[in-house]
Image 1 (cartoon, rainbow, N blue to C red):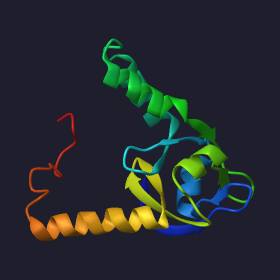
Image 2: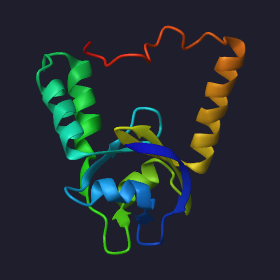
Image 3: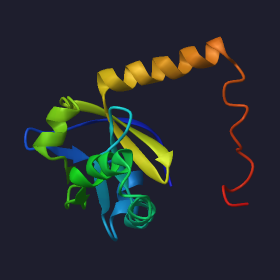
Image 4: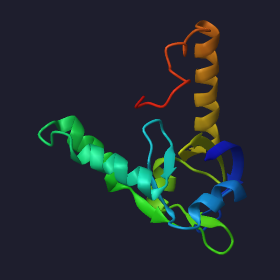
Length: 150
């Protein structure tokens, strides 16, 4: 499981050092790096990525939103595996699109982890904190006690 928040660097060749705890989960089959929907990148294990694509493929392809989401998710997706130094390659077009500088934030969110520019993560984290201050019960409707299919 991907948990925690880390600051790591991307070198001039686009290689991102992955935290050791995350790296262990990527060793066997690698993972998929894809565009997130919140101004970030997402790294998903192959089984989760395949399940998401299968679900998306079962949607009505005549719906323009479905087609656009397929483009966003599949169009930039890259299979990545850590090298001997525990780094994954973040392609230049994705680094540019998401304005990833030398230092980035990696945020574990359970079955995947996110890659954020420092600035975008600071803004997102502030947004979340402010929303909770404005409405302390904001997340009361989210079920945290059982699996989604129960």
